[in-house]
Amino acid sequence: MPRSEARVATDRSARYAKQLAAHMSRKIQTDWSEETGHGTLAFSLGTATLEATPDALLLAVEGETENLPGLEDVVGRHLVRFGARDELVVEWHRDNGETGLVHRNDEEPAES
Image (cartoon, rainbow, N blue to C red; front, side, top):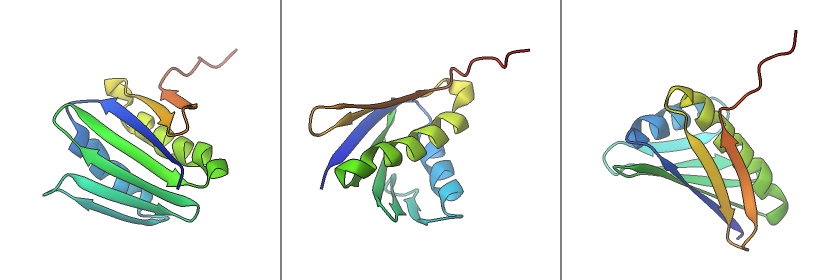
């Protein structure tokens, strides 16, 4: 199954993974283990895995090729919003060599 991965630099990876899983659990099946630092998000079009390490949150999404951008978007967009204070950046890399989406909190100010 096609896959895309991202390494998000943060020293609070477990906190963000837990928050992401809890937030998404309102709409999809999720799992997060504080003991192992691993979690999953089960979307209708694919899955996401979360792995907390001391210096990064490792993300992976799997689904059909046409669904990867949507999976990258929903996981990356929510995580960046939660980590706005820490200026998290999620840069996806697809296993076929293509560059995936990049999420960062750099919204332009609204025009007057």
